Image (cartoon, rainbow, N blue to C red; front, side, top):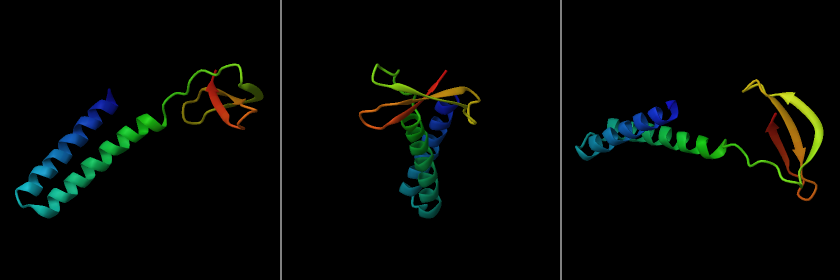
Amino acid sequence: MLRAAVLVIAIIIAAIGAWLWSQGVKVPGAQALGVGGVLALGIVFERWRYKKSDPPDARWEPTGERFTDPGSGKEVEVLYDPASGERRYVER
């Protein structure tokens, strides 16, 4: 909900900037367009980058490592894929 509200606000700021730019108010228009665009891209990137991973399949082996994630406060288990060397962190 908060993410959607921030995205809407960012789009409104960018639209106001574009309108100001088209009316000949170049510097404030460019600033508003830039801030709105960067904020909107940040929200979209954050959703894509930090999405939850797929559930592990049979190739993932537990390493025995567990720790509390400082960001969420939840317990996380480390899994390892011997074929690729990739590590995955799964909430437990």
